[in-house]
Image 1 (tube, rainbow, N blue to C red):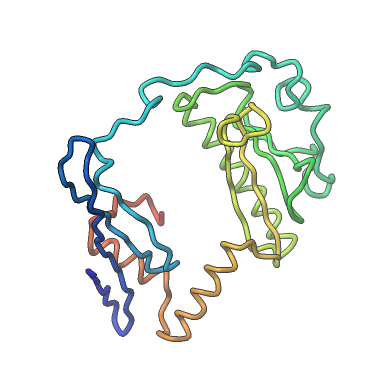
Image 2 (image 1 turned 180 degrees about the horizontal axis):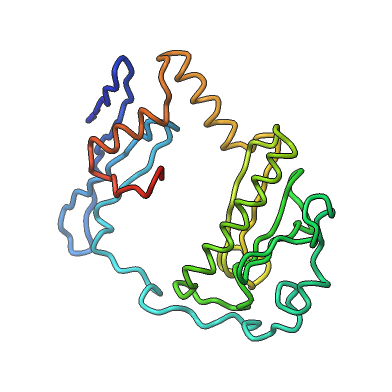
Length: 236
């Protein structure tokens, strides 16, 4: 097992990886050994397996994009397309949003008709009903995320306990999207979801043991090691 310790003052994070070998007889009759690297995440302690033998293997279907879904042109029945979005989607109370919805550029944000928590909203990317993977404009996502940011800030201003937040997207039916029209799901609640709760407990335990901050230590290690560090924009 290969173990790397990240020293940060009086704290330490452990990065572990171990290689195991599978021995097989290939269809050609040749004896072959296949190496698999098992890496352990220093924060979650979950493992991932890197199968090096698959590097040169080509996956079917990746050379071309599949054809558009059958309802790619059916905008008249889509509740997220204009003009019906204004009559088929819910609105916020006037004290939260006087106009009923938040708008920025071509993005519109409104409450989720089927909420998953105390604060649950949908942020439309723009008015394009079908957007092929990789073709969305940068500005459309910028406006949608800024809408989410404004929504979450207003939620937190009115409810200081709603600190567990998420912004997610499952785009197109193959990713489980129930509606074709591109949109983000944005949530906030005082009750932590599984991943939030796990990370909070892990960070709290780490601080109690080391008097240091888990994610700050992890970030310092990644920036120093440079193997995976890409860069930064402002505080990101």
